[in-house]
Image (cartoon, rainbow, N blue to C red; front, top):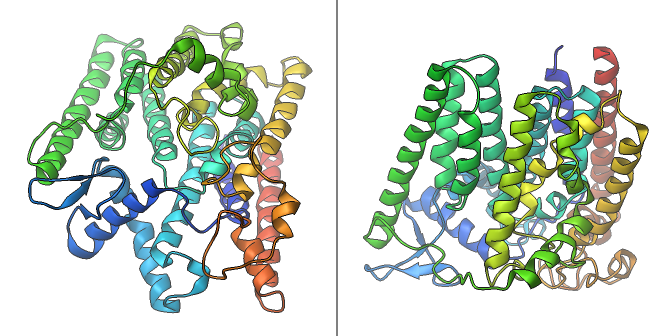
Length: 453
């Protein structure tokens, strides 16, 4: 069965739909630091950043980001897209903080849509039906915290993409051993270590899953790919630290304290109205019922792997004094684990399953969209939860005080802002065109299911 048309139209549908609710500006100091490093690499071949939050002073008296090098490098194509926008339009008010930042933020939408397609591919690999896999991917992006976080330059969504590519390479190599899959495993391990250091926890579980099945030779090949990629990643990580700080090993998160009482943090991270997984992403409940849907030994091992990853990170972040994620929307530290929670849904939503699971998924999707919608239209620098955010129409009725600047009380929808500022121009036509493009992509996606049936 040819999946390429479905994947193409799913990606186009997600990207066009996410572009409708594009914010076009950053909200967090972390994003500024990412942009500073990306700008330094592109313009000066340097890693230098400005003094500020999460920028550490080095022995040479300069300041450098304490984060890994992978994400600023990943942002480079969109930075150069920003160069093109600057060449075409110069310093324009529609770009807020500049065309480079604007383009990189749109790149975050691109990565989020790509993550939805990667999740679809993994669902199909474990036997999910086309329609159920695509529906679950749409729910992942628009029915969870992935939607509001698509508007940020956080590294978490990209981390999800790396983990899904890694899982896909493992699953494909278990089905048909090819050297290309091993290269994929090694590259994911290498990039992941330089993206977020805590990704090694997920690597440990996925590494065990990688060597759980197949011949001794195949298991050894996957283990070797993991080790080679991991060692290369650590070498790059150490070199990056040496260039910045003159030492191979630094404690990137030395300011974190892991002494918070679990009795307080765990319930809040699971079902708390402000930071809990369940209110913001109800379909993560699918993981609880995953074991009853396992039809094969490999599926059971996969569900155990997913369960282990989610529990490990839940306990890790719950123990931290920053378990709540700071001034960010909802369950910041856990939302990127949602694909592992929702993966069993491809079995529970199959055509031969009881209709009750489909009704639950539909209800959870509507709930998730409504609960995360304020995180899209309200400035998350001021409003960090569904309970604290103002109403949509309340923000829509407020006048725009600064055409080239976003305040905490402004509506965070770039297209709506442009239409309100220039109602008698081409902006309303372009916005209508984007909505029409999204509907067209959705229609083509629907037709691609019928053609494959």
